[in-house]
Image 1 (cartoon, rainbow, N blue to C red):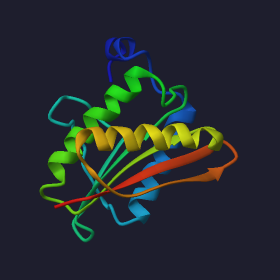
Image 2 (image 1 turned 90 degrees about the vertical axis):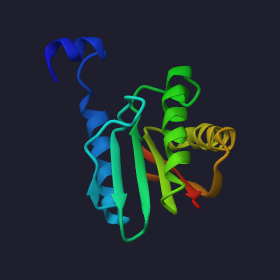
Image 3 (image 1 turned 60 degrees about the vertical axis):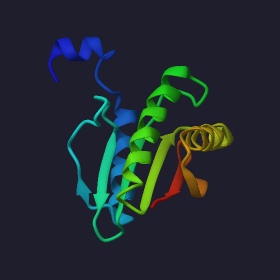
Image 4 (image 1 turned 180 degrees about the vertical axis):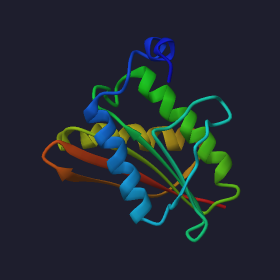
Length: 148
């Protein structure tokens, strides 16, 4: 990324953000989403983690959040774009997941509500929704979508 691109995007991601991104990357790989997709989505957005599993027949989208909250409009807009893309992917893949990593486990209810509401607004069928704490300063909320 060029210096100009960093300035446009608000600067380079923090070390904490990158640690959360790497955690999502590792978890998605361990869950069977082994093929990294180094691409942008059709609308030009680029999730922190985008992986495919041919074995599971699914897509994994992960977003690392260090300073953003589930109540922020810009965050909701970005996640809504990912949901739109997953709605299209559901035509081809069965086991799709969107996950968000964030700092405080006490924020899980707002992240769960955010993902659930965005999925329902998009017309997606929710197969499961859960949150867990990975460490004292790292939590994940993930939504499983039922495809086809």
